Length: 444
Image 1 (cartoon, rainbow, N blue to C red):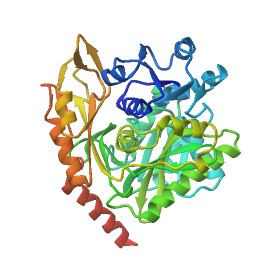
Image 2 (image 1 turned 180 degrees about the vertical axis):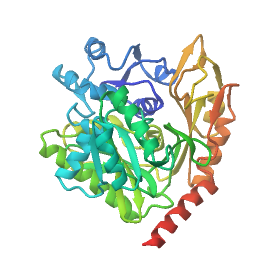
Image 3 (image 1 turned 90 degrees about the horizontal axis):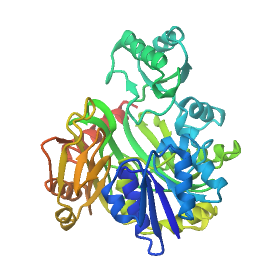
Image 4 (image 1 turned 60 degrees about the horizontal axis):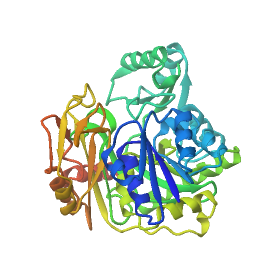
């Protein structure tokens, strides 16, 4: 079977790695940057903009692709799934309509409200700053401001973290509306949820979902969860599929919410096919929905896909044939710690086109996994771009061992112009999470 993966980041490298392990598959790739990890695995690849629908489809047709998987959100928003399907190519990714669950935050919130799905936050959509101010005051300024469309995980700003008071909130709202951050002159304002975030990823065939281990992502740039939001600096998961602060009951609540969203999309006439993930907050008042994404997370995909023992291509076929109710996923019961290497200045102004020296063999020998992200390969050298460069994943029986492996792997990556959040997966940071949730639960 010929399988095409669209996308050139670390998430897509992890997807390609999972597909490559399926012995009956020929892997093809279409990516905007020359990701050396994907290039090594693929039988053939082409460089190009992943939102150039015509070129992607032409490439798929010319290589007689049987199955396509779309990694990033932008091609989903452009309707790549729908166009490929019209060419009789199976796609294990959601349609343009179903992907609105991520690509249109107002549509997502309205859907949750319409179907009375639990975990909702108070929210409102605004087109002018005049209408927004009374709503902010109604919530005592405890709000999150979200551009309507896609911002690569960098557009959300939260009271107390990114701004203080109504005046600063209004300044950012004005910026979102006037410059159309996210693609629309609208903004979603939500009540601020207080607690601990976790990601729950799942596979959906439009009727049934199969969930994966919970992951906690660290989006803030600096140690101690300080600094600006990023696409994600690293993440971790536990061998039991939960998290140190997350109970089985709370995990199940997240899974129920995802299942209800899948049901609501089917009722709307937009059956959801492929990976989906919920970003949830454990609060003193239960699980709250922060956002829903129509794809794997990045970095969260790198925590779960290396643990997948089930043939990924067979799983995709079961999804497309709506056979997940009779399908079982086999995962290694191990902990993972993922840490990103980013270019110096990332989050502000990245230093680009700087060489990174990667000792792949040493990383493999220490038991870690290496996933290339937004780098370029030229003359057998790896160079930084403006986004995240690469990630390492430690896998072991528990988090301390996995974190130790990840740190050893990072020692084999050399550059004068990179930055790493070394505290991800460390005991003191995880203990802060546990203490925080214990405090919130005590309030109730």
